[in-house]
Length: 635
Image (cartoon, rainbow, N blue to C red; front, side, top):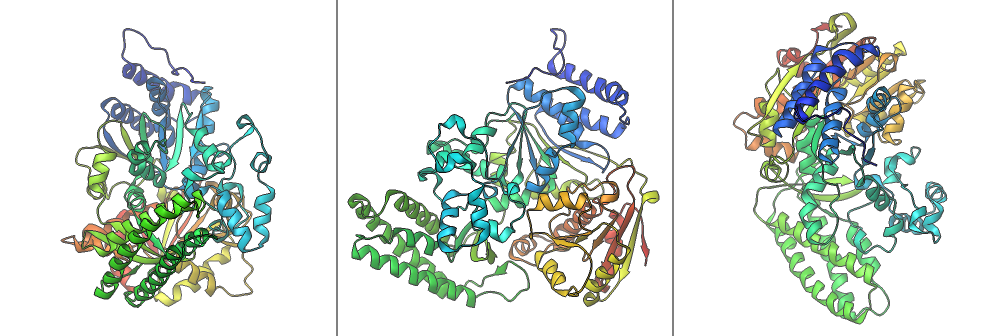
């Protein structure tokens, strides 16, 4: 049920005048009375956000760690949501940060208790965060792994029995299965190959039930940047096809860790061709009774597809990066065009099979949708356009990925259109208070901005120590630094680097170490905060991770976090007059600020940052030293 605006309105004042008064009462009077510190930076931020709501503007709200920025944006957001009758959308960098925002005792929980707001907060997670019943069934047919039986045994009764819709409830989130690895989860979660609209289990699907649940939210809907982008890109198409958009109408957007939005936008616009997906689709339509001509065309498609990927592998540019660049060999392009022509002819034959009912309707619709996307993706690959292409292993499957180089025009049309206020919130949105790098990368011309510092005295609570090393000595030094038995976060700039460190560890080491990907990440973070293990290794948690007090006292940064030498960033560099200063350095400076920001989260925190630096990285000291909260000391 919709709750009232948390302050009275009168004929003498506008809503925004009343909101302004309420913000002042909260931060100057009520919070201090409840034992909270009066923070000028936090109060300033709340008033600036009120102004952005009034003017429906884009605002870069940079506030240092410890400012209390979550509270500063939540209070105006909730009031404005109730005033407009539409929920506020809080978009986080990823699913792990969503879990942190809504955890027991977190900011939303405290806010609800402090002011008895009776908040209606619902989560809208990305589709790959939900179990797919069809894929679970397929995985069980292919293998008898124990984790599949465990997932099946924990399904609600209504999944396998006939119950009224009133007895259904949300289930099947990734976080509900903390003990299984990412690789195991990727066998049973939602995958784009699935045709949800034609699925006979749709009404019992956990994802569908979750969608129906959060669409009724009145105060806050919390999602990831990836899911927000998917919603924006698919909204018009879904409406045109008679489907409901992925997210409900919202009154405003708060982009927590908003500096990561560009990468989410690019990911949402990628098109993929996976080597194995074609086999799964064609296997489902090779039913008894299918016409011989259709069978022959399917077999020819498989042969051409295999040959395409074989030729693709021979045209990869040698690299240690996860994303492998592709040489545009004329034979490869020609084969791609031949595949498009052949599949178009095969789809014409599917029409006859559909009329004869030789292929089950669900499998036929899934195959037709898959091949239409395949043709579109292959068309992007074969055309001379402004796209970036690479090969990478995704979900243990070789995948051709095609992505637009720029997303600025689409963002301008679908997001920054002036219809709703948009707040970027983070401790690191600028390079020394210059917001142009972020604004330019997103194509934002008009925006408001401010930057307020952290209230912490870093010189008293933090040491930054630099370790001059040869590159090959870094892993051993990181391992040696664990001897103090402190709660330690080790940050790597890539998954490959983290995996190499994992394999370099002595077999007989006695430390309790966990690696990102071995279990569900939000559960790993929770266990780390509770001290159940000593060392957390991650390539992903450079931002947003909140581990106060003794939960984290040491951060080791193995390499300066420059962007990878992969096709995505190479495309950016190609179109830059000064790639080092315009692309690489700003990325590194923002990311290193984020990584260091994991250490000091409250006024009671203390600890050390260890930078492992090779000769080249040391030569750039004047560039990274400028963004550190305290000067780096020699080891």
